[in-house]
Length: 381
Image (cartoon, rainbow, N blue to C red; front, side, top):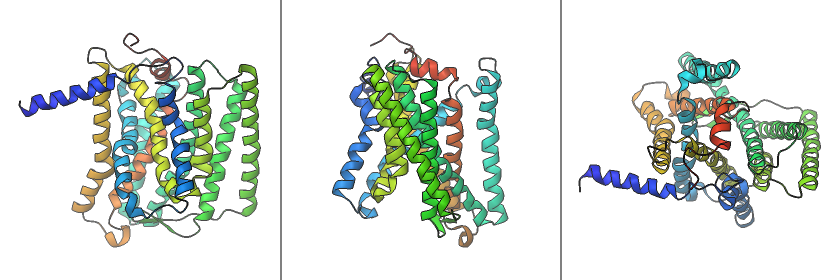
């Protein structure tokens, strides 16, 4: 058997395995157990076990290998998939007639203007020798992390509520969004208060700024009040329907409180939370890709190809390309440290990812309705 035919057999076996998870239970992305574990419930189990069994975490050397594997298999592909989806048929999305004008402008902004501005900022500050200015990129990234997390947690709640036909009123959705934003701002203010000294990120130093105690205290009060309001809305909906979209509720609460507000309860929790955030994202992306796949190619083959390409693209963007450039390209390593391009790639991909997601997953984007809530391109299996 030649190498070519061996490769073909391997791909077909992977595709055949993927076919076994295509079936979609009514009211779920995939099924009750899979949705529970990937959308947030799995993080409650794992992080709860960590807090109980490893209250002080473990030495970094002991989990360096598994964390690296998780990055390659889960974290990095979740970023890569956003590029695969966003720039698919980009010309039509940005300049065609299939999308509303406002949405086309958002695609142009997130797909062309934002990356150009990020490249100009990162390149300009590096060429000018301003390491401190370049470090502000890390501040922007960490500022957007919480925003991205709570928006995704809210989105999963809404997706699950629609899947189960347990929709919330517009007023209830507003309460959930406001609560998410206040939890994010409170957590961010707390983090920059804790980081009062210069901090290192991939070899570069970034600086926080002082937050007055009254401002932080006021944020905590508002977050508590909006949390109570959100819980009241959930109780009220439960009384009306005698049930709730539980996987969505767990995803919302886990995202806001375990992943954002109380993520610092354990150093190991801080490390593993991005993996669960990525899993949450991948569950929706995989359903999207399955529904969008061409039946002629085979649904399982399409998903396997999509995932495999995402893993390769993530490896190139987060590891191979920036590390190669750091080695071969001469620059002042005394000023910027040994990983200037790795730092720039991380900042660019993370920040750009948030902007792309804000367009792809917004209400009113027809792709969401068609490929997340719609039926697959093949008959139900």
